[in-house]
Image (cartoon, rainbow, N blue to C red; front, side):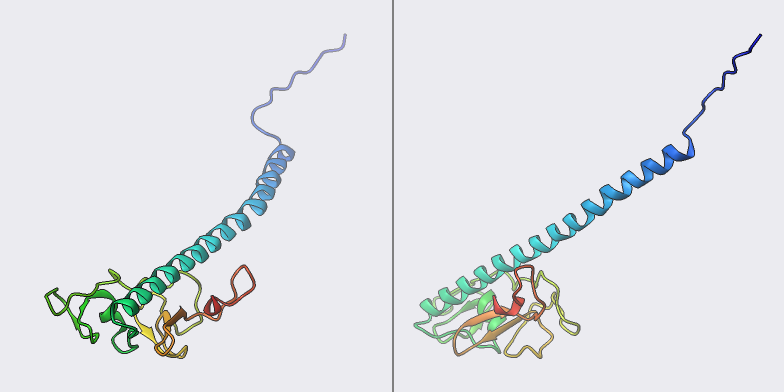
Length: 160
C-alpha cells in the first residue's frame, strides 16, 4: 500500500519571493527616472513663468516711468515698493509715489544652479559672477537666470 504524503504549504517559497522582488525592481527602474524628469520639467515651467512675470513687471515699469528702466542697484526696491517718476522708492503710496509696486517679491530661482549661487537670494545683479539668482542688464531691461546649467531642451537656463 502506497501512502500519499501531503505537505502543508505555509508562506512563499524562495523562488516566489525572488520573482516578486525582481518585478518590484523593474517597476522602480521604470518609475523613478520618470518622476525625476517630472520634477525637472516642473522647475523649468516655473522658471519660464517667473521670467514672464519679471519681464512683464520691467515692461510695466518702463511704460509708467516714461521709458526709464529700473536700475540694478535699486531693482528690488523699485519692483516691490512704490516709486515716483524718477524711480525713487518709498514704502507707502502718496501723490508723489504713485507707481508700483510691480511685484510682491523677487521670486527665487527654481532650477539647478552652479555652486556659489544662492537661488533663494531675492537679489538681482549685473553680472553672472554674483551669488544671486537673477542677472539684469540695466541698459536693455533684459533679465535672465543666473544658471549656466543646461536644461532638458538642451540650452542653458541663462539663455532663456
